[in-house]
Length: 232
Image 1 (cartoon, rainbow, N blue to C red):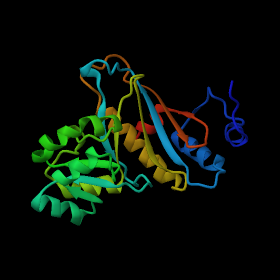
Image 2: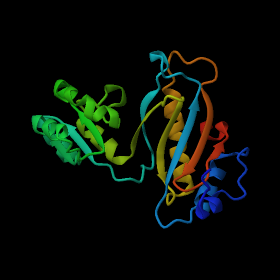
Image 3: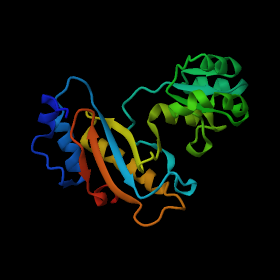
Image 4: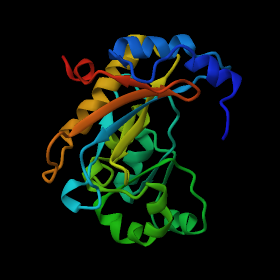
């Protein structure tokens, strides 16, 4: 059985796994326990009462974090003509049509998030086997298939985080960096949780949100009091 390293043991020392924290206290503890030389990512994990094997219980959406994600996101856009120009002006890193499709088919993926105009989807559809497994396939449900290219690019650059429930019924996402202020992280956690709650599918029965936890890259996992992340 693998043992935790010194840093992980130090980060988790004195933290009772059965303790439930108010979100403010949880964030404060993560910041205090961060002793590494890099800016750790703070993540939220939400366990839901859904079975994603059923189509009417699939949870998917996008959340625009009020204080950004703290990470640099390369945005690729499939568009032509005026929409391609709009994407470039909005700050897209890679813009193209047939030429971009060819590059992606060759394995040249120079972006972290993909956006497309509706008319480009017949072309982009060919890339399902490449982009799908990476979770990068454009989808109108999360605003990545749209004619409003400028807003989509700015949103992706500014902190829009996509989420999708995993097989075990868990949704997770990065909501900032340890270097963020406590207030900024709390706001981002609440925004993410709210987005997941609003994405409740029609087939969800019983208790929808069962557990919320926060952690940092090298920090402890802390269970969060649900009321503290849903209260105004």
